[in-house]
Structure formats: structure tokens, C-alpha cells
Image 1: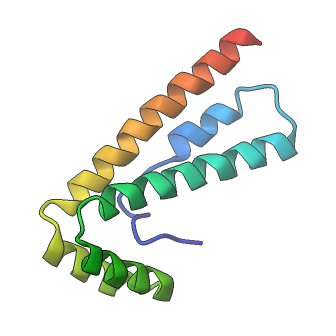
Image 2: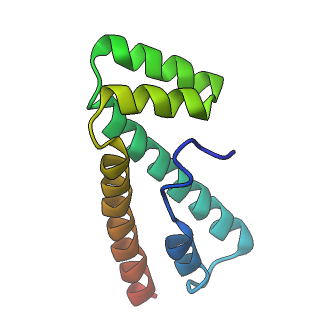
Image 3: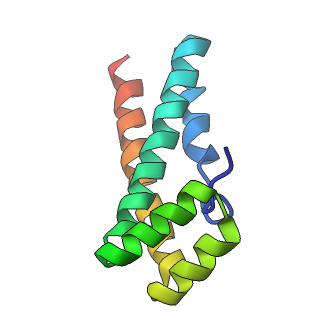
Length: 108
């Protein structure tokens, strides 16, 4: 499913690293799904840490409705530089993922 933050985040550089590992297709798909899930949870954590309890409820309701325009309008009203914060959280996670994948290649 396309997420509201998809236009901000590029993950292919990390998932393409999976192709360099000696994995079955099933293993590669499983790891790609885990990477995607980790990214999603990292971004949600970054957003939720910026919101009040009441705003968290509004955000999660909008997220559940999958209304990307509504989500962005709300986030831009409530959090300064939210796009930069999302990009930073995603980039930090991608750096860690690349390190883990590099270790996995070296131990093979």
C-alpha cells in the first residue's frame, strides 16, 4: 500500500542490497517486508513523538482513513518541519539497515 510519506522516502537503495545476498526469493521478500515495516514504524514514531495526546488521536484517525491530503494538512499545522523530521528518521534507519546488511554479507 502506498503510504502518505512515500513521496519523501526512497527505500530502493536498501532493498536492492538484498539482491546482493545469497537468499531465496521467499527470504528476500520477507526481509523486504520487514524493512518496509521497520521504516513505517520508525516514521510513525517520529511523528507521534511530536504530537500531543489529542493530536495523536486525530492523526491516527486520519491515518486509518488513508486520506493523504488530510494527513499532510494536519501534520503541517501541528509540527514545524515535519517533512524534514520524517526524512531524517528514515535516513537514520536506512543507515542502520545498510550497516546490518553489510555485516550479513561479510559473515557469509
